[in-house]
Length: 478
Image (cartoon, rainbow, N blue to C red; front, side, top):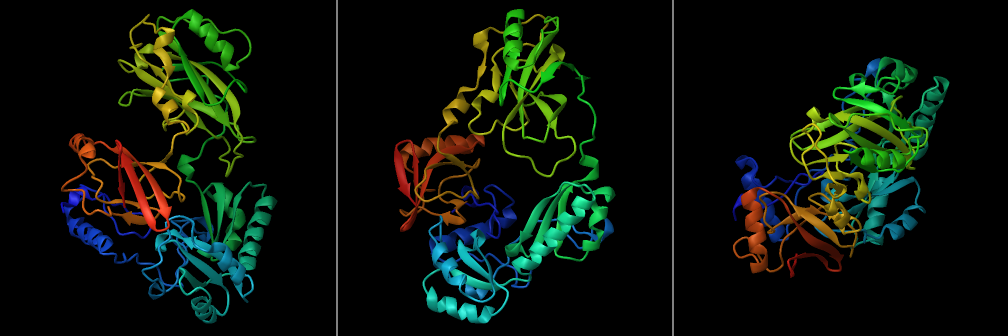
């Protein structure tokens, strides 16, 4: 098998490499795929039972406090994890195990370990050896292990309560809670600076970590800017519609734009010979007002978007969607040459908000150039995706029987799919590299030649564990 055809990525503890990556990892990739085909286990290298990885380092923040790092779940001794079963969705007997565990002394919490075949981990503060033997008797064929947790739920809750008391005394807004599976309390603060962290100094050395913005990245308080490089603010107000944008190049379009934007009053005069008008129908959560700090023109991507910030650096915001309208004039000299798009942020619009992206189908960089109403519209591709199957990729998790669209990374074939639900899937019919289905070959070869990704339909089934892959009218079982 040629290494570059096998697409595997690192997800948690899974051994992995991207197709077409450093040749030095090629042998390992081939060996991993061979193990999958032979039905052998993949070593995930879990930490020892007493390892708690929740901080980047001890005392690296002011006052000897620790910052939160990549979280790892507490796990059992590697020898306790058998090759089977492997849970590919949520079919593990969670309710039955929880009902049993709640009757045992020292039970603290139960969690699912996706990095270790979806096995159930049951955390106890005492009698772990006894509980391990009991689990073997009660659930001999199920994937479940017992571990000793370093701190009880009550101990972590008391520590979290103390952190919130200290924050209240200092008039600080924080978020966070104790986490038994990770053995620590994680606290979100606005900024990781001396002023914010000083109230928590007494907690140094405790199983607690802090997460927040670095001081250099913190949003500074201040009024709404009225202009920036190549742009100026025509008006703003709380109102209008959320997740919306549009563009005006004529006085008639400008009048309609202003009317729907939600900004009150009359539209300011503007010379459309040298500027165009853009409406950003932005969104914010209650108690977390936003601010438009800049208008960014990404020439390479041909994208114009806002730079919205949250003054005060809040730790969390409600997920309600409140409208905030910004209407700006943008110099034509700033625009890319040719068609371009307008959206709220640098990232693509979220699922379910296809109206956010406005496509301008003509070049507006020249003075006095205009676009007709038909040349200013939404991206039809986003509307096609709205309500479509769940987008998936290497490392994704999906539920049993729910269709998804799996994006195959550039340069990869379909001889191995995954990790999907922490599992590497191979065709039941054997290798597809040498002789892929005729209807698939052209798409795979074209994508590989262009270095582009392509999409297949996938659906996980748990009994028996299978993955159905479909593209261009042909299905394969993995």
